[in-house]
Image 1 (cartoon, rainbow, N blue to C red):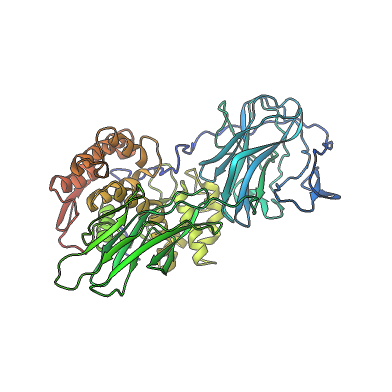
Image 2: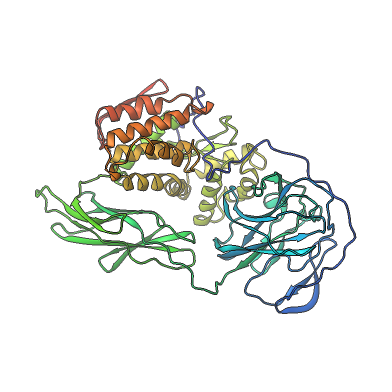
Length: 589
């Protein structure tokens, strides 16, 4: 790619885009917990499952029983730590980074307890970006040895993705082995405790709270916390909810755009199956699909099913119907599924949402004017620099950040669709710097290889995919659910790009919640213009609380201009200014 537009220094545009309210703290580093050596001894077994009666070595100075087979298992078995009591008395959360080579379920958490490790212990499972996936409180503990607690329900995890399992020791006195993960990790069946080169294993956080994400790296210490895992559930997995708000819109003469709201599910959704009548027409990871080659004058029914990572499919969505008009007829009738489970009927207006190729192109250009000071968003695949906002490198078409998890997720997806690409070797470094401003393991070589990758269509596909699944699809689906036209859908998407999809007051969910306190969405019976003004007011208030967003031009001199003009369909011609620069789009793409 050429003609890359450098982001303007007058204002920092990017925010953390944290995936949850548990945002990264980049400077909360404290000294590694101190320790006291206590001689090794063996702990007794508590009604173990089937065993191979043999000891195997697990790391320096540690012995464990090897389990022959069990439905649920962990990494450490009944291993005994080298140092049973660190002697540190501070309240601390202690964690272990691990992966599974297969998709499965985490059912609970274990930790090794010393006699002085007292108080109420909690255990948690976290995503690598710090989102708490499950938590539980230990009960019925013994005085010392391995303690176990089950989560209220199994948590599904994906294959080859890093997670953190942790427990909270309110009085300290935790067990440890020093320098445990320096030379290697440890694998038991499908589970692996990661070597430190895969992201500095052995993590902790000093905190008085009962649960906090342990994001501080130790010197490769093993704090003897373990995960309970199974790739088979005794009971049948819970099926995802059926996709809702399925809509069909005419797109061109012989094509229709089918879109739907993402399904709720106990396990992550992997794909959606789209049916025309009884025929499966596609399987996609997206929440929209364009069906082509249709006959004019014919009616078509569409339903969608969600499929989670276990392969469990939902029941079909409510049916959405459209009649492709004969040229010159001037009308398109249709019906669609509604969020309350009852069908609703009405008239389908062509290209009424941002999933239309023309409207999506408009949205990309509008966002790029604010993010990249250019309408040429496709020239930004090669863009990469540190803009000094504390989130490391910012790059690509919407500013993926090495300090948040979207750049990592995008590069991981690139490695999936293009194995052995020039950026795959940086995945361990991106995992290590996630949540920090560091360039460790990246640097000029990474910048050079990023620009090389930008010439690869697969890398461009990976950027498009991460943009859509993390920002565009959730924003537009929520806007469609709220009854908003393309302008409102774009307003949601632009907010999602800048603020992220979290629920705290300065994230997308918090801004929407603030607007809902003032008025109703159109889907709730409110006036669309009144609601969008309330939303923009809430967004501007959120922006003004952050120094990086104190310039609110993209609200005041762009989105509000379109709204005051009554341009709810976001039709060209469009004229606006952002950060002092004037832009125009004279006709729809």
